[in-house]
Length: 329
Image (cartoon, rainbow, N blue to C red; front, side):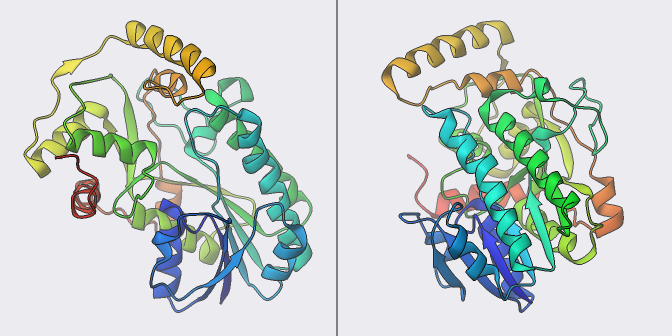
């Protein structure tokens, strides 16, 4: 297969590229000018330099491709220019999918997020059919991804063979940025986590998440959504796992929510004045109010989504940060 991938320099996208190459596919990647391409080092890929809005370039780049994986997204919990995030995530998705439609590709897998899905927040896992609305979205990232998912659904109605995947929280090696979740692991390793909030996440090994994308292209049903997740864990449980893996003591102090929320509001206010990223992102604290637990049984049953123990994924993440000079001591 000839495959076109956006977001290939990022954490999930680069892992998808590596898995595609393992399977023997020919891979063409879209890379934004000035991007850090270290995640593509020594990978046999055809690099196309351009952006999500370069329509003629996109149509030409996809013209001989069977599959398109649209993984690229502006993933930040805070941005000084929210409109830039909507431009990338919503309008960029529209541009990519319109180009795919015009190019006649056989199938598109669009990478959304579990953040766009309904979630009871009380520890009951959400699934692909849990009710949700725009008002449930917290922060510009979730709002923009929610709107982008609606754009993707429009293209299904236009006849594009498209599948939506909703990754939970991938962890593992090669998180070069790192992602907000990778930052949690890295801060733990650097002993910058003296306390924790009472919240929870669904973790999945990044390699399993990448494989889930490919399985969606191979086996997924057109127009369906698939949660790519594995195990629900509280933040305290994640830190205890990291303690077992690294020997670094897990924080024992649980922070009360309201004072942290107040501090986040203050940080947000100061960031609007200074233009600097807040130490405590407001959207992150607001998201932490809910246990972000999700049920991935649909992807496991229909696609055969792998379920590598998350302890192994956390261990690989810690080893990679340590081996690549991310630790401060």
